[in-house]
Amino acid sequence: MRIDLEGHAAVVTGAASGIGRAVTVTLAEAGAAVAAADINLEAATETAKLVADKGGRAEAFAVDVRSRASVEALQRAAQEALGLVDVVVNAAGWNAGQPFLDNDPEFVENAVALNLLGPIWVCRAFLAPLVDAGRPGRVVNISSDAGRVGSLGETVYAGAKGGVIAFTKSLAREMARHGVNVNCVAPGPTDTPLLHAQPQKIQDALLRAIPLRRFGQPEEIAHVVVFLASDQASYVTGQVLSVSGGLTMAG
Image (cartoon, rainbow, N blue to C red):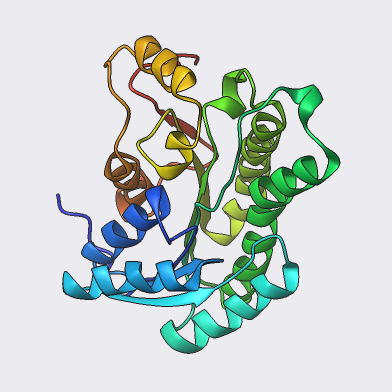
């Protein structure tokens, strides 16, 4: 059965590239109107144009998810442009691999603000009007398998992404009575600019460890996200779905 999101409005953070761009395009292909939000407005605009070229609808917005005020401004602008947003995808994220003891305070604060506080601010801004309107909705948070099992050289990032997982489960419990399903996708190594920013020896080691012997493609993550945003996943909430080529198989 084809996923049909006609009549839905979505917001995707981190829409300028990688997983966020793929999610934006795939949501639009399913019929949703999408707010493509990123700190890089120029690249987010390119994503919106890519959607338009495929016959879909997306509008680009600038946002810094580290700033609550910026996120709240995004919510107002997206609602004015697209109507009440009922699909929220937190795909913005950032990391740079280095040993924990080399992490300076600025690095730590930035990693936590982007990867954990960002999804919290976005959910707070977009869920309040949805609940007030009595409308059901979907939230899909992008975590990482690093947040499930840990990752060498990514300790703060893994901690923040682990926080996203716990946040997702707790928020799912609170939002269930409002008809809002909240789930989490935990990608493994995926062919994105973030992966290719890692040292080559780390990329090579990851590739050898993946049973499918390849990195994931952003579109493969996006299809899972869009499923969780759809009515086909109406009885799924509070779950963490790993998309990792078998790199992690923890229950």
